[in-house]
Amino acid sequence: MIVHKLQRPGSTLRTIKLDFRNDPRWDEFVSSHEGALIYHHSSWLIALEEEYGQKCVSLACVDSTDQVRALLPLFPTKGLPFALGRHATGRRLSSLPRTPAAGLLANDPAAASEIVRAAMKIAKDGGVQLEIKTHVAGLDDLADGLGCVPWRCSYVEELPGSVEGTSWSDFCETARVPRTCGSCKGCRRLRFGNAKQQHRVNWAVNKAIKLGLAIREADKEEDLAQWYRIYLRTMRHKAVPPRSYRFFMSLWSTLRPQGQMRLLLAEQKVADAPLDSPAKLVAGSIFLKFGQTVFYAFTGCDPRNLHLHPHDLIQIEAIRDACKGGFRWYDFGEVSEDNESLAQFKGKWGTEPMPLFRYYYPAIENHTHTGGALTNSTRKLWRILPEKATALLGDMLYRYM
Image (tube, rainbow, N blue to C red):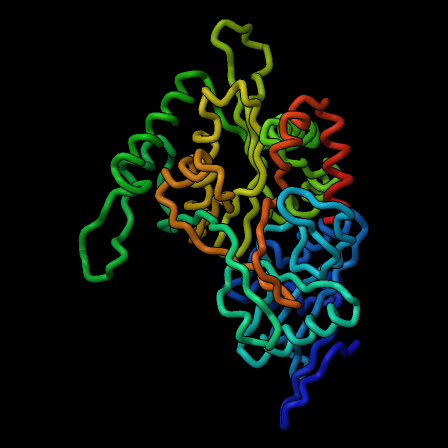
């Protein structure tokens, strides 16, 4: 179905709705585009559709030969009927809701402009707001009326690429990679930031190992269910509504078989425990993999076990796996302005902050955001609720967001 057609003389570009589930052109374009994220892939879009029964408005700009020149996935949202945090999240057409970033993929400015203007028309005709979340700057130059709101920063580390070696124990200190300058014949040791940051990483990892922690990859649904209970405890402590178990089951069944999802678990073997006793699950994190990037997406750790430094050990294993897999980027995710401790944790790995942007039509001013966090007046109450209650409330809230 044709959604929009350029009226410029000689132009043959048109925007259509492409069936991303059944038309191979969608994933072929995503896989070939260097700016594509896992959140553009059909597997993520299927998970979002299954989460609340929403249908993706999957726009594609094609030329006269039906070759795809641009893509823009969008989801309609109901909007919250009340204010949450410092602003209300209203009805909108978003790329993408409940997702850090997505936005459009385009091969050229003409296709980018065409598909953005088509999305603006759909939003206007539907009486909703258009929202585009992306790391790409300058989209507001593509069409009149589209406004840009600087968002948070995502902390990203550039990896040295595939590293040969037999064990991770000597990876940090002895793995050598080519210098990036191109003219040097020498090499440098792989480091996480400066010497102080490297010391902090080494100290935390060594402590976790001495305390009996080990990492393994989840391989059955029972592992996912056990991790989800810890995830609920974590989100309650952070006073952030949790995603539903239904959503994570969708990720498990859709992304994991394609090698796009990995759940790493940190377990502790108590020294005095019987040999046949199971290890204690301390923490776990979900990583998403696609293209050149590994995304640190979701995590859970009982606050009482933070002193064991399980997240440091999990990150080491995930970074090692990303290097061996030949990935170029390791994205630790975004951090809110008021979460200094999380920013310090992600910064100590030698990451660089990458600005994110949100574009709106109609354009808005004085926009503030909380990213799903609750207001100060409700945080204390949230933290004393039963975990099952937070799961139920979180599911109800995200249904509108």
